[in-house]
Amino acid sequence: MSIRARTPAPRRTLTQLAAAAATALACTACSLLPPSRPSPPLHPAASPHPAAAAPGPAALLPVSLPSLAAAATLAARFTAAYGTRRPGQSPQAWLAALRPLATRQLAASLAATAATAGLWNHHPATTAHATTGRARYLTAGSVTFTVTLHQATTTARPRTLTTAYALTLTLTRRPRGGWAVYDIEPAAAGNT
View 1 (cartoon, one colour):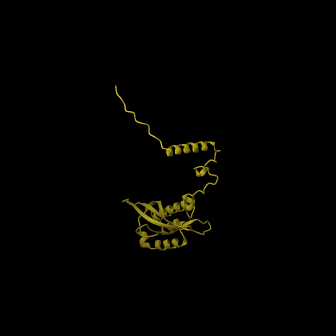
View 2: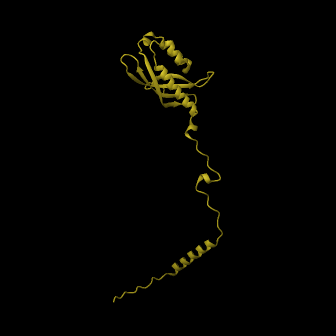
């Protein structure tokens, strides 16, 4: 038979009893109060005064996305025409393909370059295509793109050349309006 020692129950002080009674009274009082207004919702969308929505990235651009896409397409078209030389093609025929895509200033510079017979006669016939890369610089009236030109020579010993250019396009006041190529340089040389 085992005998356990009885430990006396802990005595509560008068202060502890008073605190317990006060807590019980407070809880009873809370249950008797009328219900309060519901708390405001946590989701801003459910709020009666929704916060202004932040604009998307396209809204922050100085030109519209369709206009920027048109400029990128024009940059690729111009660069492909710039890099293409057909067998027996004259400088005037080459310029005729570029002139509608360029500003008057650039068309004049290209005409002066094409008039140099030594440069034109030693250039092999090529076919080209181009892909527009990233925009380097963008304002409300101009954009500079990096464009990669892929040229394939059509000579007896064919080879492929890849060159990166930086093209600056400007919005023009031509009768049709729209973009025109203002400058073309090697990508490493300039155009921001």
